[in-house]
Each structure stands twice: as C-alpha cells, then as structure tokens.
Length: 221
Image 1: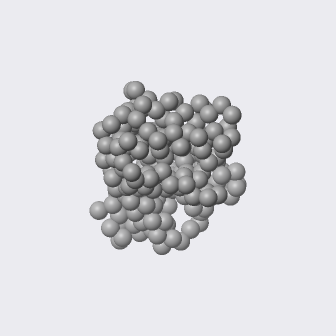
Image 2 (image 1 turned 90 degrees about the horizontal axis):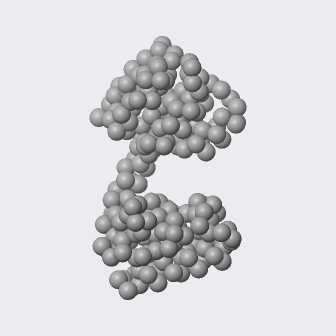
Image 3 (image 1 turned 135 degrees about the vertical axis):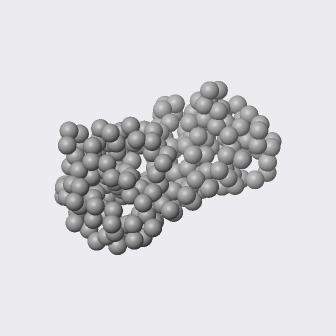
C-alpha cells in the first residue's frame, strides 16, 4: 500500500482527503503541526501533500527543508492563488502545485503519476550506479570501477549528468550548476564534455554522453 504524508491544519478537510484516498488503497498520515512535520522521517512515505497556509511557518519553508534532505515527491496544495507562490514552490523543488479547491480524482491521478515517475527515476539511478560511481570525498567519478581523474569542472558537469541519468540536462543547467566553469559559455562546456568522453574511452567504446541539439546532454547506459 502506498503511504503519503498530508501536512494540513484544516483537520476536517484532511479527513475528507484521507477517507477518499483510503478507498484508493493509499494510507494517509495527517500532520497538522508544521514544526512536528520537520522532524518526521520522510523515508517512511512515498509522497508529501503539503498545504501552504500553515500556523507559525509558511509551507514554502517546509518544502525547502524537505528538499534539502530528500527527493520525495512533493505536491503543494493551497487556496492561495498567487502565481508567485506557484513559481516559488516549483523553484524550491516541489514537483506539482494543485490549487484548492480541486477534484479528488485529479489529486489521486497526480499522486500516482508522481510516485510512478519517482520509482522509474530510482530504478534508472540504480542502473547508472552500476556504471558510474560518484565519489564525493575525492571529487571524482569512477566508470565501471575505474577512476576517471576528473578536474573540478569535469566532475561538476559529469555529476549533474549522472544524477539525472537518462534525463536531458540543459546547457544552462550545467553551466549555472558548475561554478568552476569561469566563462559560463557553451564552448567551455563542449570542451569539458569532450574531455569527459576522452577519459571514458579507454574503458569503453560506447558513447555514454549524448548531445541533443538545442536541448542539452544526457547520460545513457
């Protein structure tokens, strides 16, 4: 059975959601105290459904703290109609934003979609870890057990690609996420990608880093 954490101070509304989801074989734990929510073990859950209008602390702050320590799917649910809240929530790392009031069937569909996507990502990540192994201590990456001896900039770019296995990572994401690329231009990035490929080549003829014109790069098995 799937298990979600519902952070909501409107207990009457929370119970309605709980009753509905229970008919869909989803267990819901309700937490109406946002400060208690901050110390809950997220590993016990498949997804978080988070209200923004919480007493004492804004739900956006909860989302930010959750994202620091977990990749758990987060749906923000709020009666606040500000587009700023939606943008901030997604920028912080929430996976979806569902304005109240909403159809429970739509909530259920979004929950299932996000959980399925998270599980697919986890499976892909397990696959790539058999090929690429990130060593945070040495700031290096091993390919099939062989150290690639990457420079800091090469490590930052390769790490971003490995952590987003099979997903496209845009040039902008790689540039802004790699502080070691001083110039911040595409030519520097292309050179770094080329050097990473060269360091992989002695161990495999496969082209693991694929370039997608106008979109970015991705690592494939």
